[in-house]
Length: 371
Image (cartoon, rainbow, N blue to C red):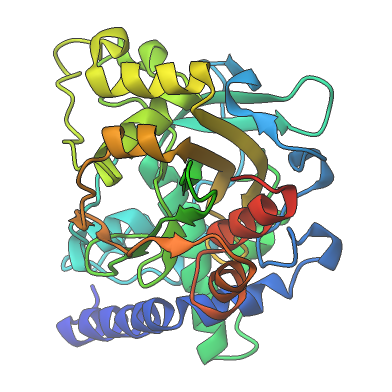
């Protein structure tokens, strides 16, 4: 059995790499992007995607077909076993932690870290005549055990050039959902368009590394959240299986300051009777709000996979939905509104430490003239 000193040494080594990852996440992401072909970079950003994930023109969000295969079995890398064992520290009993998520939960838990059920991406085609996403069942920790563990592995190599990266090597092309469990986030650039002046502003969120287990210290479009049921109760799996409903919940939480707890552990969310949801949906159907998908992409460092969406709302509707924007939440803080200009887009897409998905959405929204 390892000595106490050996246990502490293994933990200190893990903490050293983890600290390097957290403090240098943006730079490491830029460097990791260079490991992939330039023709897979999205709109000149570090985000990665195959051609089938990038439509030539924006797609109405509600026109994307969703297919659910709840019994799909995953056979790729799980982030457990020999490929990751070497980078995980020892537990108090001398055995090695079995996964990266369990290591974080025990040694460095952020304020928000819960293994909730998710919809796992199986296949996607957004460039063809019938855009679709095919999904199965997953859990949040699936992506921590592969994606965040792969980021840790990359950070360790940056401290020790030449070190092996068996997990990243085993995963291979990160846009292949057959090789790793792929949780799907829906990241949305929210735009307020002033109907009188014609000028538009957009919103960004700064993710506090003390509060989140992923992408701490980076800017991101708002809202952004994992595509998942609202709670673990079985009825939510189908009731919440909607890109629009997921976006609605995230908007209510991150911009309107409503609770993330909708009571759906005891009864399904009545979307047709929820005032915020009905007003937002009426705006979409009436043309006062316009929701589009501009692509799908994967982060080169963490392998986080985001559906890239843009929601533009006319000011009269926006101000009714969000009479008082929340300035902080459980994951970080909201920045003041940014002008939708070429200068602001360039600043956050290429100069500020913005998540790869956020940078790509900003670039694509500007390219497509969405406002």
